[in-house]
Image 1 (cartoon, helix red, strand yellow):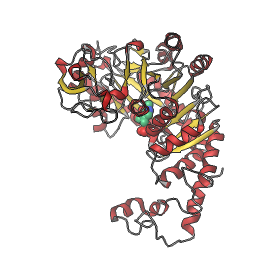
Image 2 (tube, protein in one colour):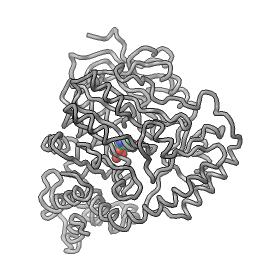
Image 3 (cartoon, rainbow, N blue to C red):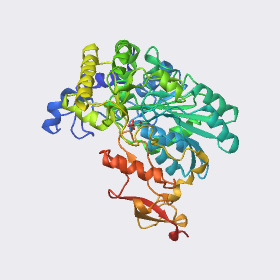
Image 4 (cartoon, protein in one colour):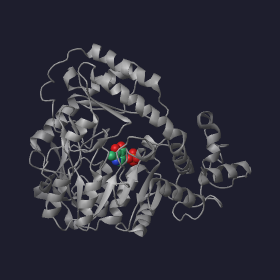
Length: 499
Ligand SMILES: Cc1ncc(COP(=O)(O)O)c(C=O)c1O
């Protein structure tokens, strides 16, 4: 299978050119010694827009060919390479679709980049809450009935953006969502950051493109074997303007995109169509066999497809393993630490659950080691019984009534002095407020546990006791929270500052 961009890079290097251009390390010769030691010959491929190597922002050569191959492989009309992760993909999708002041319907469990996109677009948002999987304490799917009800009450909404699969692997019924949104004249954008491998792995739920989504972003670096930060954006149909997507991407992406990242996307497509896809298939089959064994580990509840369906989803990413640990008496964070002591590093640790990502490089020995590690940790953490106080079913997403949350997000783009950096007319006072005194105020900054990067508190949301409870619980369990000026304060709007 052809790899046009990779081939062009290798041809260029093989011709032994003498570089008098950037990057200044000159194909590695002038790079810091440790970089040379670790990256070696790879530095030769760290090139830039040279004749024959094309230009990401106006592709006509090997980049264009490589993008066309991606589109053909996944069933898109056009695909775009991203060098800033799905983060820039989400921002570009919103810049290209949402007008200033327009309201977009987003899932409440979106990644923080969606909030950035809304802010930059000057758009407002309504948030629809996903269902909840109470045994594990993780979000489920977005129900089409809920979206239909909100769209019925807000016929002005043209753009809907959801995350599927979720970080934990739950897939929403995207085909029904697309049908509903299209019937009302809207378009469906899907953050499929975690689902790029679906077309390549048997038993995966249908991906967003196959389900009729209009624009889709995928972090190929997460599951497809390409380098960190490399991702793709796909378009299908004409509900999203292609030229606006191109212009938005040119605005948010570097003018010196990394050829290593782009070439790794070219190779990842070929790899997953071929050997990588086959390997991941076999890893997924082994994983399926051990799910039952893991469910038998004392205190552990495996997120199964059945559980995902009960929680508003239609399927589960077969390459992801999410384990609820509330019955074990320990937190997911304690489980993560105990596993790391045994050399096993999970993807995500939260108060109620731990999540693992399988890849084409895994095998039955590595999976066996995980199973053994989990059994050992279950012994170490001990007691199985009722979940610790307040943990079971804790809702990470307060504010389930979507219509309650409709903030003009750009209004909140302030500095701490209360001056609006973008539109001074809209200035409101924002202050650092002790958590205990913030109840009822509108949040001006998101509070985001990292990972997964899904805000606990969104800018524009009214701060409720549940937010405080979750923030305090997160802190006490050692969750890394970003967006708080200090351990006990949040950034909130104080009304006296309004003009
Ligand atoms: C659902 C979701 N969307 C988008 C992103 C951002 O992706 P990237 O890290 O590729 O920029 C993430 C990152 O974790 C994510 O989980």
